[in-house]
View: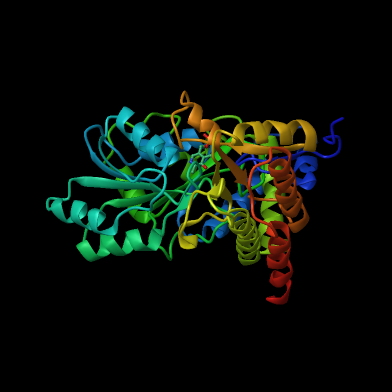
Length: 405
Ligand SMILES: *Cc1c(COP(=O)(O)O)cnc(C)c1O
């Protein structure tokens, strides 16, 4: 007999858990899309998005998912044949580089696999070797959602400055915005992309390109920008509907507006970063305990805590036991974990040794502790060797959090 009846828990790295308030805000008839409430919400959402990104730059809103803004961002700053330097530690960094290639970029991909961050010296050398500054763009992920590796973006900015290289720094924050600390202006990021369905707690379907003055300047030198992706009318519309290149995504805006109020006016961005940090540390404590046996079967992908995302954790259960555990949890416990992505070829049976926990957005201590306890039940069920006290240790991290604020 299953124990899965009750509220289902979706612990995949996007779409994240959506607050009922966000869903309820969407449950209403469509408004006039040309004036009144839609205009008000648009101005409010744009101002709030910039507060979440911590930028004085501008934001263009697209009716698209994350893949769309990979393309939208590049379309505005890249001519065919331009050199692009891409840094990747996982499927998503590689994916953006692939889009740059498809759009005609001459892409140099520094690929670090799925276990390591970028190599600072290699980056420095690649930039220093480009004496005539042919590299126009440096594209990378803040968090690669497949490996759960987080890049230290300020280090990339520091290397660009040290070498005196003018390439535009473009960062994919789809999995990190509203979860991990990120400060666009302070960190010297020129273009940042995000989407609605992860830290922003809103259904998938709208996505964002943030651009500073330097990036908007680059736009002027691009010859053929496809009309839908062109950010110019979206940033400075002459008529209201140009903000959205057509019909406004009315209900997504209602939902996002509510989510942004929760983020900025109620919990506060810094508290959100701290909550995600603590919940991530609770997960790490559990994994450390599970791995505390001879020949551990259950291991986290990223060894160095500095390089770990606070929103997604990629992990392994040896001998292809992650997939059966995921399926068992979904059927019996009402818990859906994320599949392993990019950790092995999708046709290689070894991909079944990997899974991910999404812990982004509308997630509190009891949801997280329930997720961890359910995983532990799965380890017991499948007789997978694991150390003791994982849940105690995770619970302790949560209680300690309360004493720090
Ligand atoms: C989810 C994600 C994407 C892709 O977003 P989609 O909405 O699935 O197209 C891209 N980059 C990162 C870092 C992501 O986490």
